[in-house]
Length: 191
Image 1: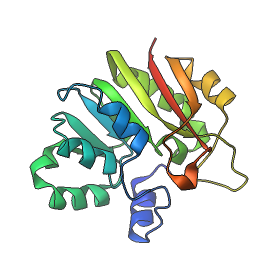
Image 2: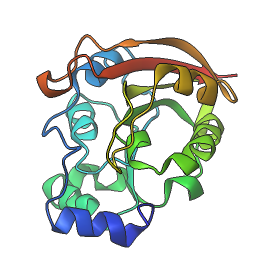
Image 3: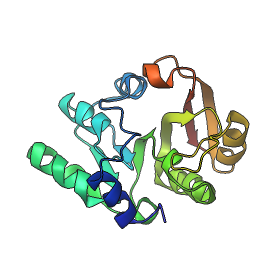
Image 4: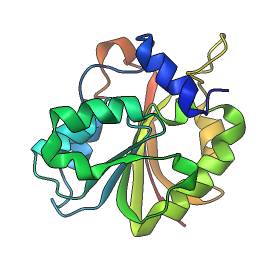
């Protein structure tokens, strides 16, 4: 099952991390940099947490990386011991807290589609009163079995509208070349 700790840890051990672009997403870092350094930020399903590293180095003092697998978090704690207290080894669906900004970068597409409604509900629960969920979603259905799992803009609007108000969703202008034209950048807030 692709929602278990052992499944994701095995993917890291075998180097099956095709979702990892090797650096922070330009679109997410650009958006996050407009927020105050004291903003409480969560990056769920963070993996190697390139966005978390970039934001920590930029002085964001309350930026948290969460992953179900301890393996990438252990590597991050060794590489960045000064930020290790902001690494959370936990199942996203069991996590509690309130965040002003949640960054979505390949976590949604890693989850089985059957978990998507629960994902939206949990995101709404984790957002502070004026909090935002911002991220990238694949703009197409995939013909092969995932993860990753794709989707369509219409599907996302229908799904997210149960608990969130989508403020914008458009083809990302700052995608990495391999994903150009195939990512939607979206902003949503709690209803």
